[in-house]
Length: 219
Image 1 (cartoon, rainbow, N blue to C red):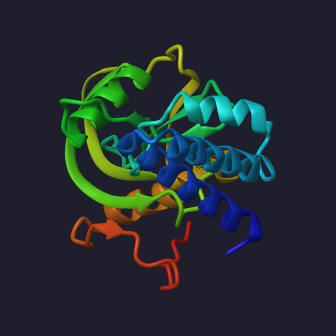
Image 2: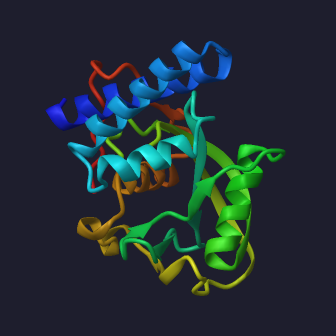
């Protein structure tokens, strides 16, 4: 693990511990200490991040509920020819699976279908949970620890269209994937989705302990 990733993980753990402390204490001295821990977390994060410590302190103070990993979803939508639907994100111009954060009151599968519709204009039916990815093990560049549920789905109605969250949207065969222009670690999840498509009987993927060897996906 790189020094950068070690700092991010330690800073993130300090942040979550500080938020937990702030939630359960009313002692003003303890509150002051936990705020200092939060500042240290922001300073450590800023050392390996594009944001400055003051901006990160503000962001962290606005999200004191962050104490456990957040749940997000990605959806691998396949057509009859085995192509996968990818979006070009508006925030970083890179390609990705449609997805996002789950909302309170919905199942992960419902969230996956909703995010797919919001970002592609397509109504999809979720077929199967095919993977559960840990953002820290996957080295995702994010200020939060995420559990990423990967679902497979097929098109029910509608057609791909650009939304306010996207610059472009296309169907891709495996040989057409813009591997060098993908967002974050979407490449790992896209490879696994194609692997599942070729053999739906493979077990659901999940992240194991970081020191255990990871499977190698080829494209």
